[in-house]
Image 1: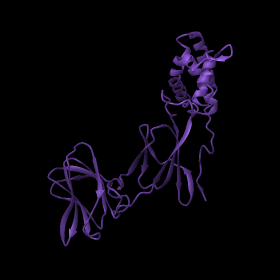
Image 2: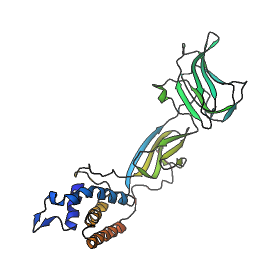
Image 3: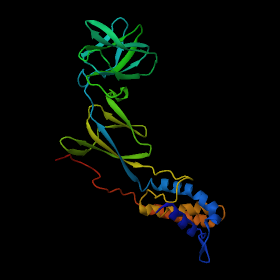
Image 4: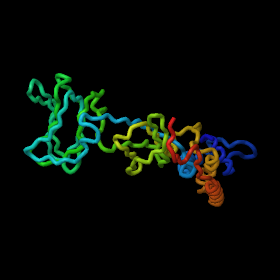
Amino acid sequence: MNLGEAKRKALSLMAEYSVDGVPIPDGENADYLNRMNRFADMAQKELATIKKIHASYPIAHNPIKPQQGLLKGFDLIQYLPGTDIIDQYPGSKAYYFEVDGVADVYIEENVAGVWTPLVTINNTTKGVFTAYKGLINASNPNNMIRLRFSGPYVYNLRNKALFAYSFPTADDVPIYRPYIRYEMPADFMELNKVIHETDPRAYKELVEYYWEGKRTFVLNYYLNGSFLIQYYRYPTTIDSTTPDTYEFEVDTEAQEAIPYYMASKAIFDENQTMATQLLNEYQVKLSRLTTDDNYGIQTISQLYVL
């Protein structure tokens, strides 16, 4: 059903669609019609909490190993003045680290035995970790590169990494944290499940993840593979600009309740008795909707490998 069809059904329920078999012009029903878009939106969003709209969001997560090796560099370290903290590797092409406090950090290249600054970062933010990442443009791609934490004050650092690979831009340098956060789409309403596809061609429901707030999916850095976030979404908002050709997004059986809600709200000021009857019919249709969600396998209790 589209929005225009729902409006015609609503007018019929209100006994405002025709007189003596002749359709009433839209101009005479303009006050009703102008409000119906918003009423349709309210109804569909309520229905979507019962007959939920399926959606999915793919994530490709295949982390790049830093030069220091797996599971290293995540620890919280306190820098004390007088002893610089240094990581150095040959041919580093990118860096990532986080600091909390007044800190002086240097990316340096060893050129003929002399450490030459390439990048200087002076952090002044205190009480919260600030992340820095970027590309390293050395004069010789094989020279030794070091990440050096220095300065006259005590501060904290964590999640430090040097990468042997370059990236198209600084924004493409990986975030190096034990857990990586992925924001869900704006239409995300509720999580259904997470499917993990890994080599050799395994398909399983994932249980090793965390959820922050309403829309943030948190994944272990070293858990690689393709992840499919199966979720329930909000329907598109229907407003005054939505055309009558818009197709409702909830299931067909749920769509049939929408005109009753539209009609009850549109006629309320003129005929509260009819409005109440129509709203009651809407509520009855609402109560008859099932929340069954039996699409395919609902609980994957074993691992399938081809």
